[in-house]
Image (spheres, one colour):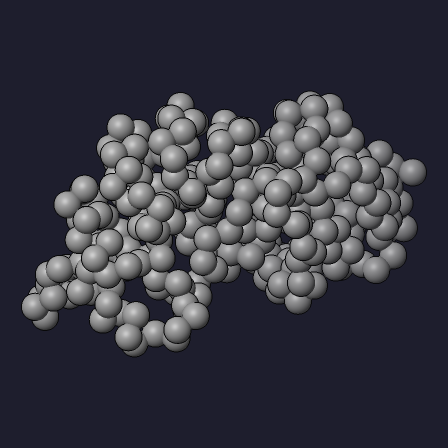
Length: 290
């Protein structure tokens, strides 16, 4: 991974885990209470059923131990690690009632985050030895942004701005709103924006054509976002920009075309599907009574 995989803040993990356990009724698992005796003890192994990249082990651990501090959770893999189908990635041991009540929540987090990391790694590998970085977007599951962006980093990707307050990104609807008040030139819009935001804040503007790129350059933006352009158009835009701004490509990016986009010379490729469409990695918990 190029970007450090900083640990998730415990408060973020706890907030997500306790909300999920409450949502799932884990504190009143009527099925387990009716079928499993309180004194029964067991252990289980989390097993990857498909090749992928693991992410979310600290979240799964928090889920498995939240209801019962006597439950132990031991990792056999690391977040960011590539595993093969059949790999054992963690072990849990404790009261069977506690394990069963927490099982689904732990698996949901582990499968979801590992799926994000796995898809991210596929995009990162596809651009390989180019200079392009794969970025996520704000298209995250509400309430789970920090967890999903952690998973992107586990897959070797990088994070875009975290929220609306972290950077200026002038998109098509902002441009339309500016036109309503008489500002139709993108360069002018960039200059006006720069005059109103903190001087250290980076300004990025979305462009859909070469004409818009030329207009935007007149305002000296820090980054130009090329929206829904094919690799040929992106290459032309990169030539026009000529190093006067960083270049990001977005929209319509797939595993089939991401390499050609990267080779067109962009600095960043943002991919919304990393978080909004990543399939969960198949992981199961195989239990044994003790």
